[in-house]
Length: 179
Image (cartoon, rainbow, N blue to C red; front, side, top):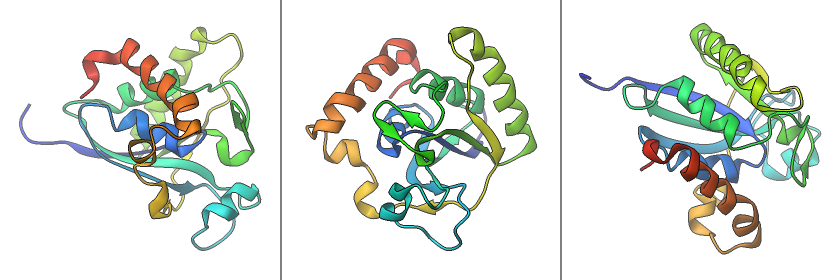
């Protein structure tokens, strides 16, 4: 395992606070940035605009990771296991296209891996997987108050009710892969 093999992934599985908190715990993940991608409105959108559902953007995270420590495939398996990829444009009480399940691939290799993971994971769900697999569109970093949200606000209601159980599930399923 010589040197580092730093790669980038961009995924969305509902509220970016949840997805960010999950991947901040994974060994080999170097950075996790909450943001927006996949919209039709030009220019950098704001959180308020995203929440309207009118821009077409999804709440996503963009992470860098050392593929010598954790593979893109492993990241996608963790992603699929820590959100519901069978609900179209929603995660729990969060409803709208901004909360869709999406994998924005950076390379053709990532596209191939993403499609294979979705096929492999299909048997684990009673309903069909609706996760989009699409080429990366411009990524816009979210406002500062949305970065490190769970770490900064673990006692906030949404965090304790929605994110903490996701992290518990993550530890149960992937404990050896966590920091």
